[in-house]
Structure formats: C-alpha cells, structure tokens
Length: 82
Image: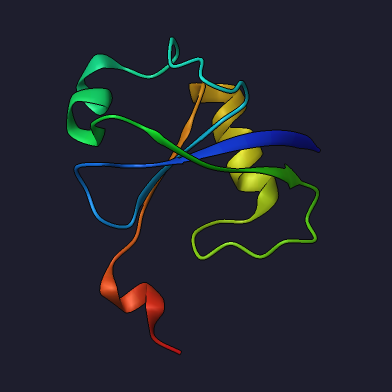
C-alpha cells in the first residue's frame, strides 16, 4: 500500500502519470515527458485496493511504480463504454 500522485497530460487527452513522489519527475524518461507535455497535478491517491481504476488494479499500479518509477495510463474511447 502506498500513496501516489496523479498528473494529467497537457498534450495527450485521457493520459495520466502516476508517481510515488509529488513533483519528482526524475524517474520519468525524457521521451515520455516530451510526449506527455507539462504535467498538471490532479490528485493524491492511496493505493489500498479500495478504489477501482479504469486500467489496472492498485497492486499492478504500485508494482509498476516501484519497478519503473512511474505508471502511465493512456485511456481509449472504449475504456469509457459500460
């Protein structure tokens, strides 16, 4: 269980970056940041398994953040269909 900070992209619609440390983009590859644009802070979330995510589970997101330093969520229109 960990806290993560979520940022939205200014270049790609429905694209979000999840990170362990607020405003610390040092673990994000330069290529990802150039595609993502200027990050805009959205919220702080506790990855405790209680909240549902459109892409991935809290455990999957936490694992990705711990191994890669970030989790990149890129939603498609299909992700919003019920």
